[in-house]
Amino acid sequence: MQYAAHRSRSRIRTTALVLSVAAAGAVALSGCAKGDQRVGAAAPPAPQDAFARRAAQIVQDWPKVSPVPGRQEALLPLAGADRPQGTGVREITVTVGHSACDLHFGARSLESKDLVVVTGWGRKKSAKGMCTEQLATDKVKVRLKSPLAGRKIVDAATGRQLLKG
Image 1 (spheres, rainbow, N blue to C red):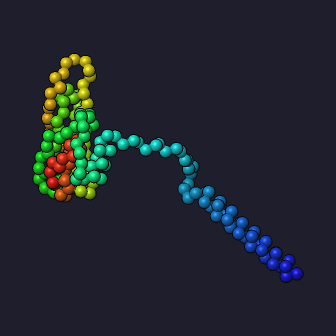
Image 2: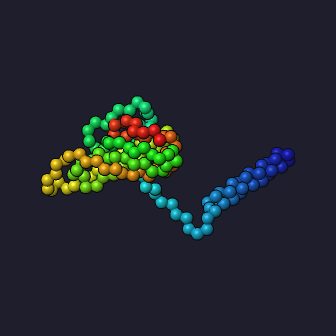
Image 3: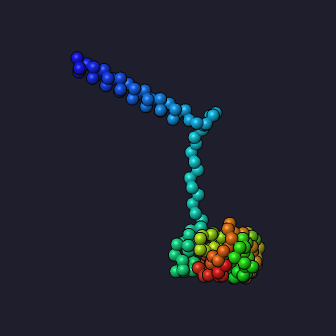
C-alpha cells in the first residue's frame, strides 16, 4: 500500500513538473513584444579595408611600427600636421601628399585611447588623357570622435608620429 501511495505522489510530482516546464516554454515562445516578430539573416560583417587593418596594427604594435612599402590609394603618407590650438580640439588639420592625377583625395582616422592614426587617400582620374604624376599637397581637416586630449597623431603609411596633441 505504501508503495502505491509513493508511486501516486511521484506521478503527481512528475505531472506538475512537466506542466510547469511546458508553461514556462509557452511563455518563452510567446515573447514579450506585441505584434509580429521576424527573424532574418544578418549581413556578414564587412571585411576590414587596408587602412583599418593598418591602423589596428599600429595601435597594437606602437611604438615599434615600420612604414608600408609602395604607394597605396588607401594609405598615402602625410606631409605633416598643423599643431592643434589645444588638447580639447575635435578637429585636426593634416597635409596630404597625393598625386596631381588624383581626382579625389582626403584623410581619415582611427582613434584609440593613446593614438589618433591618420592616413591620406586618393582616387586617380581615368586612364584617358595625360597625367604628370607629380606630387601635390593639400591641407585636409579630420574630425575626431573625442577630444585630442594629449593623444599622439600618427601617420598610418609611415608609422611616424606627427604630433603629440
